[in-house]
Image (cartoon, rainbow, N blue to C red; front, side):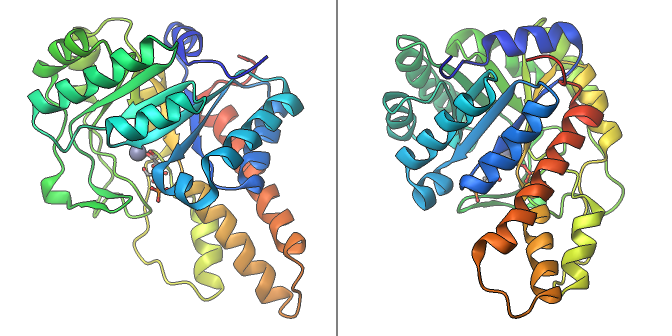
Length: 309
Ligand code: G3H
Ligand code: 13P
Ligand code: ZN
């Protein structure tokens, strides 16, 4: 089996009231940790690559790592461009073998977002690739774009039908209060489930995507803080809220920061306990194992996509 698209995954997830995990990948250990976890619990997977990841690791290396993971696990795996911001970037990923792309036109006007998204959809669909669009803006940092909390804009449910029907997108990322990174809420975590309900009513059976969905697991933030880090106020989306979203129209839940925290916390601890070790395999192996444990827990206890491959 080669790469799959998300079409079948999302159909089953919508009907089954669960979500597929979309995990960001940047190197071999991250790909291995995620895919070994999914294999153990028989879960379908979306592995996603940001433009920053593509610059860091190179398109071909990431492609080949994911192909290797398919051979090793036999799982249905989609390879997705995360936050594509131009037609050219999406085209390059489509031409280079990705099975899914996101065109994030959320920083443009509604009309310009629709025009750009439709251009990508037309190109992608002719080549059997699926497209995620975005309406509304998350707070936080995406690559070099910084959106302050005050500028975050919730998705307007009144716009979703027109956006989906005119562009032909296969899934839609929405803004209901999550944000990227490790500092998601200043006070009490709050998500606008009322907006999600309205979107769900207007787009029956249509897969919704939740970005900025790391829970910022305290265990790993504590490790970072215990070994020289300084992350006061780090806070993520409570797992209970993610379970609720997964039981609704949300079929894809994006997780990156939790992987970064698990990897970094584990490596910081490793060096604190083994200050003179210098073989990268010695500290990358426990980091990979931490990612595996984290992803298994997400799949089984939060997303509910175990045994759905
Ligand atoms: O939404 C952003 C993802 O966490 C990717 O982050 O652009 O730093 O690779 P990155
Ligand atoms: P987190 O920063 O919450 O992991 O979100 C990742 C994401 O949305 C990638 O597109
Ligand atoms: Zn995102």
